[in-house]
Every structure is written in structure tokens, then in C-alpha cells.
Length: 224
Ligand code: DX5
Ligand code: ZN
Image 1 (tube, rainbow, N blue to C red):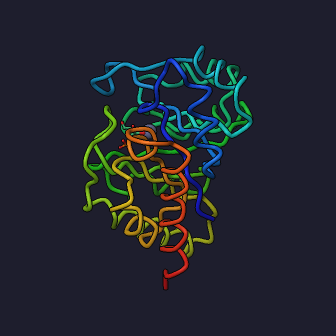
Image 2 (cartoon, rainbow, N blue to C red):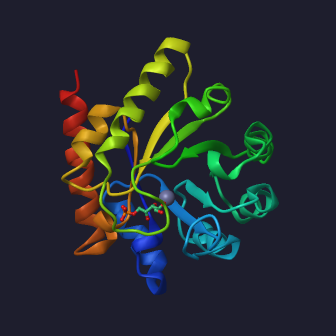
């Protein structure tokens, strides 16, 4: 099933509740929350208080993408604030298995993220415990970057491994997902589509979300 997860990174933070509601009216079914620490990525964003505030204005699942070092130290706080899904970067976790179990112990769905330069193979030993894999299709840190087509083969590879090993994780894609790229992403196996700039950058978030979902669903129907 295809789902759209707007990234609030590109939203108007002064009108966050309104913007999330608008995207939801366009069919978005997950809210993607980009957490950056200024160390793992060269940018700073938000923490648990903002997740807590979002929890009050939406019933949609809150998908917290932790682009931070030492995520174990913050996972309990994000879970307490109301996160439903929490993903951590393979590159930031010395004990990825332990960190994924920590997320699950807080009753959240657990995701593992790989940067554009990180191969799928690095996740081979955790694919049986993750609820989703997030393939970064830009180098994380900023919204509005250009999609890297060289990451598409990783979505195909994840879909192939899933059916070969009889696993059930979902495939999420983040970075540069827009009307021009969403067809390729869906045909490659992307299922949870994160989009920041394409939803909140210009125009009406409701219409933008609708158009993206329509393009994604059409591509999924044509998939062979
Ligand atoms: C990148 C973030 C993304 C990003 C998506 O570091 O993880 O979620 O903001 O934004 P767009 O869709 O604008 O590339
Ligand atoms: Zn993200």
C-alpha cells in the first residue's frame, strides 16, 4: 500500500497544526518529523517538545526520523512525547540491533535508515526485526535537494530480498520525492513516500498531497 508522509521540515513552523491538517486532507496518512542534531547532519531542527505539540493536533502516526548521534539517549523521550514510528541511521548506531529493540520496547515501529553511500547489505542482519527500511535518496540535512537516481536500485534490492526471505518490512523513501520522481520511486518498490518541498514548498499542501498521491497510485497500478 502506498502512503504519503509529508515532511514538516518544509512546513511553516508558525502554523504547523494547520499545515499538517491541510496535508492530511489531501490524503497524507503519516507525518514525517525530521530530527537533526548538528553533528550527524550539518543542520539543527527540533526535539521531543515539538513532537508532543504535534501529538495534540493530529491523530496520524508520527514518523520520527532521527538524524542524530547516540539515538539511544533520546528514543525514550521521543516515545513519551508521542512518536509512533522511530527510525535510526545505520551509520549512527554502533549497536543497531540493540537500538532497534529499544525502539520496539517503547511500543513504536522501528526503522533502519541508510544514507545514499551506504549499501543495503549493511542491514542484512536486522532486516528480520525492522518494521521498515528508509532509503535516503538525498544526503540528509536539508529539504529541497535533488533526488539521487542511483539510490533506486536499493529499493529494488530491498523488495527482492523481502520476497526471497519471506520478510515483511516496508520500504520508505526520503529526499527529492516530487511529481517528477515519484513514479520511478514507486516502480522501484518505494511504499512510504516522504515529501517535504513537494508538499509544503509552494502552493496548497492539500492539492500538492493529492497530486503526489495520484501520481504514486497510478505508477503502482502500472507496475509489473
Ligand atoms: C532530509 C530529510 C528529508 C527531507 C525531505 O534530510 O530527512 O525528510 O526534508 O524533504 P524534500 O522532500 O524537500 O527533499
Ligand atoms: Zn526525513
